Amino acid sequence: MRNSIVLLVAATLFAGCAVVKINHDATDSVEHAGGDEKGKELANRACSKARAVRAEVVSTVQKDAGAPNEKTRYITTFRCIY
Image 1 (cartoon, rainbow, N blue to C red):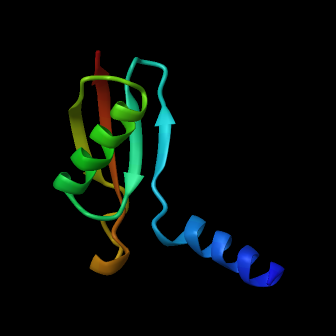
Image 2 (spheres, helix red, strand yellow):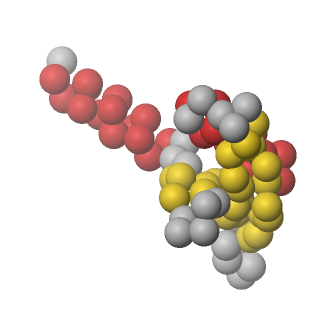
């Protein structure tokens, strides 16, 4: 039972991983799979957790241009509007 719980937690952490980073210039970044729309959705979700009204997306760039399509990661930079 304990092993299955540990496995479930580990799978949850690695399956849909998006990392939010707080930058020094009053913006935040989220690294994710997907494109512009997914980045905007994740930015809005992060800002709503911070009790902001919405997110303003500054940019979405591809992290590694040489990666195959199914492995492509993007970085969306945004700021929360309060």
